[in-house]
Length: 317
Image (cartoon, rainbow, N blue to C red; front, side):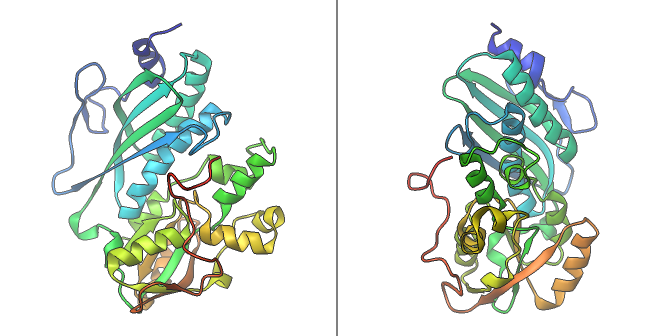
């Protein structure tokens, strides 16, 4: 059985010092030393993923590794930031080399695809959990926040909705093949980093959809001091969602299901088509789903209340 230091050195070693990813000093000292780009703001976010709360403990370890990083990178996407570095703490019930190797493959794979460098972290013993801190850069004039929506803005979402909730339902029904598009949406979400950066100059506000459309739209409206009107019939539904859940439950999942990790943006009407063109160049759809209003609250939803994931009151995987 390997010690935590051996596991780190063998499977979780960060990028070597002196490479082109801005890690001046990585693993082996008390702190990492990073080199931010002059004139940029540093965007920092942290997420903790707990087994059987955020993901099934029996999920493939490579998917757990990918997912733990993806959900944190999604926060950077919502700010329009370019990812640079991450820190990761891994809590394990036992030192299982095969499990850690597969976990690391998923984590490092997304690091490579998103351009983020693992700069350090920690491994300890306990119930399975992964904590990830991500750091990215964004020019101050390009930052997207939740507080910039204005009455008359169009509300639009990237990609499709309901896939996270649909994938969780498929997992509970016994599906295990990651070729299933809904299961992939749940276990292998993709942070919309390029989309966030492409929308910086066009959108006034943005938020990533982690807790469900209604809940996250509520957060955006609260930060902006506005309300919203939603058009549920316009919501783009994830592939296979209607077939898996039926029309009514699919529409509900798109409104109140969590784990979609798409971006919800508010943008002036004149910016909608340019925004669509930019995302089309990335192979991604942008769908108008409502409007920002003066009146507080969210009108038009077909779901009672503002449903969505909340810790200490939500369901678990």
